[in-house]
Image (cartoon, rainbow, N blue to C red):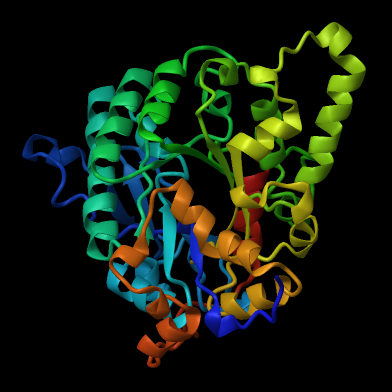
Length: 426
C-alpha cells in the first residue's frame, strides 16, 4: 500500500559514508616494533595537512570533507582538520551529525587510504602492509564502530596483495561482527589479477563462508573514465560514476559465479538510473552474440537474473533510478548518504528521500531506506535501540543544538580548479 511519505517517520541507514580518519588512529593498534613505520599526518609547506605511508602520499581531503559547507566553499586541494567539521573525524561528533541529519546508521568507507585501502597495499614491505591493514581494521571496528554499535555497519579493508591473507582477514573480521569489506572496482587497474582469473577464489570462498559482501566503491581502482585529455573540469566530475558501469560489465559475465553462487557484490556510489539500460544491453548481447561468445550461464541465470539475485546497488538522490525501481530487485537496492563528501544530501536527507519516494509502497520504502541494508550486512540496530527512537524525527530531537552549517574553511578559488586539473590530467 502507498501513503504519504513523512520525512520525520523515515528510518535511514546509509550503505556509503566516509571517515576522514583522525591522526591518532593507529596509536593503540600497532605493535611497538612497527612504531617508526606508522602512517602519519604531515604539515605541508602550503599549510595543508596530508597523510603519508612512508613515502606514499595518501588521498587528499578536499571534496571528501565538505559536509555542512555551501558549494562556494568546496575545496579540491588538501586542507586541515580544523577546516572541516569535527563530525568528519570525531566519532562522537559524527553521531551527533547523523542524529541532526535524521540518519540512524551508516557503513563507513576509508578515505586517506583510498576507498579499497590502496595506499596501505602499496608499501614495499608486505609484512608491514599487513600489520597496518589489520591495525586500520581494529581501529575501525573496535574504536569507531564499537563506540556506537547501533549506529555503524563495520566495513574492513583487505591485504589485496596476498589473496590468502585477504581470506584470513575476512574470517578475522567476521569474528568481530564485520560482514562487509571494500574490494576494488577493478583490481586489474591496481596491477592485481583480474576477476576473470581464478586468483581470487580463496577470498571469494571466505566471503561465501562468512556471508561477507564485497563492496566495490567508485574510485577504488584509482582510475577514472577516460575522455579527451584536456577535458574541462565538468567532464570528469559529470562522469565520476562511470567506473561503476565497467564494474557491472565485468560482474555480469564473470565465470566465478559458477564456483561461488552464494557470493554477493555491492556497487557503491554509482547511482542506479543507468542500470536498467545496461541490463537490457546484456540481454541483447547474449541473445544476438552468444553463438560465438560461448558464454555459459551460471546456474542457468541470464545477466539480468544474476544481477537481481547477487548484486546490490545504492543511490543518494537519483530520481531517475527511483522511477525505474521496477526494473531492479528492490530487495537489493539501498540508500546512501555519502557524508561528508560533496555529493551528500546531509543534513536534509529525510526531506530529499520523502520527495523521491512519493507513491512508493511503504514496504519498498522501508526496504530501501534501512531493511535491505540491515539484512545484507547482518546489522540489527533495533537490538540496542527501539525502532520508535530510530526515526529521523526522534533522532533530530536528540541533537537540537547541532549547527549544520560548517563555519570554517575558505572560499573556492583558482587553486581548487588547478588542483582538479592536475589530478585528472595525469
